[in-house]
Image 1: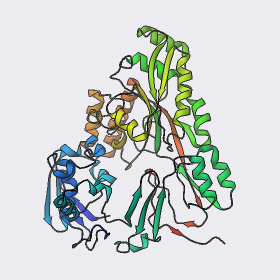
Image 2 (image 1 turned 90 degrees about the horizontal axis):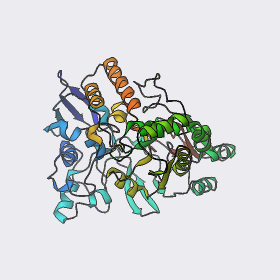
Image 3 (image 1 turned 120 degrees about the vertical axis):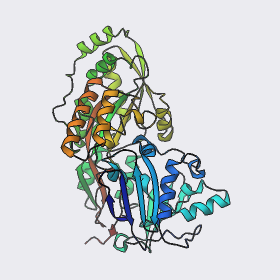
Image 4 (image 1 turned 90 degrees about the vertical axis):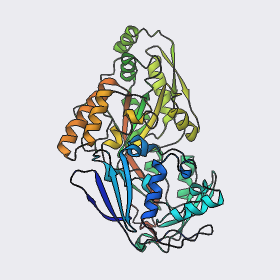
Length: 462
């Protein structure tokens, strides 16, 4: 990475990062750097997320959801430039997940020199539309709904990671079209295959399919600020009415396993003692009656239009949940929006219930239990809009200690509160499949849902 090492003070509040020297920013037709990466770039990148009055905070995007959902915008109290290659971060309180969080995409360092140039020209929004970074691939162009083009970075500090000259992401939303393009050799790597297409791909001698257990969760979030979902008995009823094994069989097929916890099994601190309530339509009807919910009550059920490993077909999942709820007298109205609009409206809390999914970003439990369910995340990725003081206290306490055994104990207590309060229904953990042409070499599946091309090359097939 861009930091070669770091030191942590005895009280856990100060992190001193030692920056890699000799790192060059991208040279493009729209920017030619006059200096190498240094501490000024780190300060610019993070101050942009912290200082609300900074001009670049007003440039798109104006929000940094992961950063703020984890409370980093308020916990980082000071960032100091010690020298050109040393930066010191001071925290208000100990954060055991700080280093893991600093490896996430929001911490990708941007050029302060490029930012100053754009600000002088009155075009700060171009910092996102025409990005400048230090990575192995240089942005070339973007055609909306068509493609994104990159070229290999000949000046990358780790040249063995750059083995292709051109990297093109062809935007293809239809999974069947993606498969046909791959089989025809129009692309070399394809994302998010449909579960029903896996076996056909495996049989094609020109293709290979990598796979590994997914670090993910497909789930249904209940907006607890909307009646009648603000009542625990209603959420319990809806939860126990869902036939999850049927969804796994029809939607995920061989790629999914039933999820009972808000964490995936591969996440340390996962509590295997947490189990689902029995699938019981009679009890579900009784709970609704006790909650005063009349038969025929309508609930908007949102379904994603995009395909993810954690949700290979959200529309089909929604239709099956709709059928399950109809059996207990609930009328679900399925609602879908284009992905950007879906997230925007969900953050505004317009939904009643919504199908969503998550893939871990950094391996720390807080990336699940904090980012998705904490009070700080209610305006961000906490789509249940659920804020429980007892739960929140446990999650916050877990971040204050670096003792893993103590953190596990606290996180497992938090998992039990989550299960009891039912802000979500966990549905499935899915296996991740990555199809590609045989000539693709050294591709590795990322557990964090990324598609990395570091060190990937195209060879010849014998």
